[in-house]
Image (cartoon, rainbow, N blue to C red; front, top):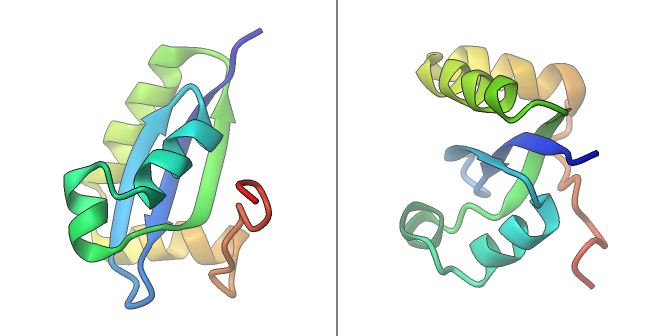
Length: 94
């Protein structure tokens, strides 16, 4: 069964990026290679939140929902799961 992920990346200054993907490791690698505009421009590379879904439509709907939230609500979501804002992908791409 395939998985789909909604994820939030953060820069060191805590600028946020919300995305959806079916291959989280590949997508993180692309962000870190700075192949995409926003994350390259603002150096948004640290994975601070992700959630897994089995249905792609549920993942897309959730991504849209989270993107529509005000910044404070996104921060609350991150800090509920990851209060120290650690890079949850540490060691994945080594």
